[in-house]
Image (cartoon, rainbow, N blue to C red; front, top):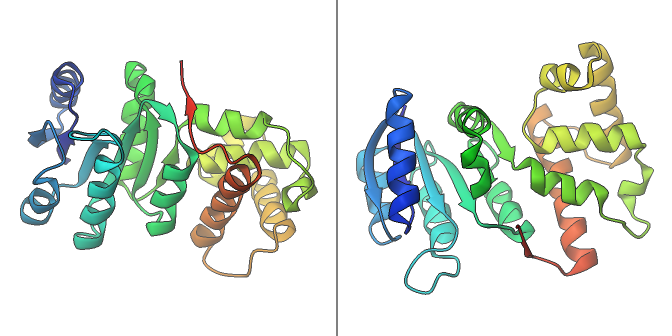
Length: 227
C-alpha cells in the first residue's frame, strides 16, 4: 500500500509515518498543509490519502476540501479523513461524494493501533468506515418521530455496525449470530427505510447517509467536541 499523509502537527505526522512504515506501508509523501496535496495525488497516484479535516491557514475545512478534490480528480485513490471532533456534516459530504474507499475516523482512534490499521485496510480495499464513537453518539441520541423510528433496537444496532463499515459476515461476528440472521436484519432495515432496489452497497450507504442526515437535520448540531 502507498499513502500520502497530511497533518499540520509534526508529532502526529511523524508518528503516523513511522507506524505505517513499520507495518510495511509506503509513505510516498507527507504534507504539513493542504497546498499541493491534490496535485500530488494526481501525479503520484497513492492508494490512500490520509488527511486531517482542519488544516492551515484557516483551520476550517481545507483538508476536507482537498480530500474531496483529490477524489474527483483521481477516483481510484481511497481517502481516510481524520478529525479532532465528531462532525456529522463532514462524514455526510464524504459519503455523498462516493462511498467506496472512504473513511472518517477521530484522531483518538490512531492511539488504538489495531483499530486504526483495520480501518485503513478496509478503506484501501474499497470499503467505507465511520468512527465507532460517531456512530455511538447517533445511536443513543433521542430522536423525534421519523422513518428511523420504524427500526427495532436490534436493527438500529445492525445499522450502527453497517455505518462502521462491517460486512454482513462482520455484523454476524459482532452480534454472535449466523450470517443469514444478519442478512435478514440488513434486508429489513433497507425495506423499512423505503430504499429502492439497487446494488447492495449503494443501498447500505444510502441507509447510513439517511441516518447521519436525520441527526444533522433534527439537531442542527454539525459539530460536537470529542474529549
